Amino acid sequence: MKREALLLSRRYAIAAIGLGLLGPRATPAAAKAKLGEDGLYQMDWYLESFFDLSEELTAATAKGKRFAIIWGLKGCPACKRMHEVHLMDPGTEAYIRDNFEVLHLNHIGARTVTDFDGRKLGEKALGEAYGIRFTPTIQFFPEQTTGLAALSGQAREVARMPGLLDPAAFLAMFRYVREKGYETAPFPDWLKRQV
Image (tube, rainbow, N blue to C red):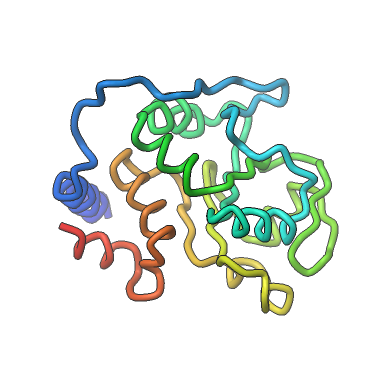
């Protein structure tokens, strides 16, 4: 299993080199991660939300962006790394900020969120309904809400990042969603074709 993970990591790195995603960056990221009172890291470009997923998805699409949810947890070392390393890369931060509306939810939070089917759930219950098991997990949704209410949980997603990928693969996953790579191949296969 460890060997398979290493090989997959190498494939991501090779693909990233081919995509020009690795290499020195000349300018710092435009935003800084801030630790909120709830213990979650926040970027100033994350959505300030009324926590209605259908409304957020519709608004993102109207702006020409995709909608994603990042699940975080207080004290999560991978969440900290994502905010202090991955999202501090200026190319990564700019790509995500320019192409996605991101809602950051707390894996054990209690804020009420209206799901695509109209159900109102606390963050923790919503995460359980979607099978969120790790932080950070990033859920990516389709461009339209049509048909989402009839589906449940992960069937509503077009892609998912369960856990933190290396920086190059992290950015590649956002490109995969933005470019609708999920319509043609699973992420690892799509990524191999990018080299």
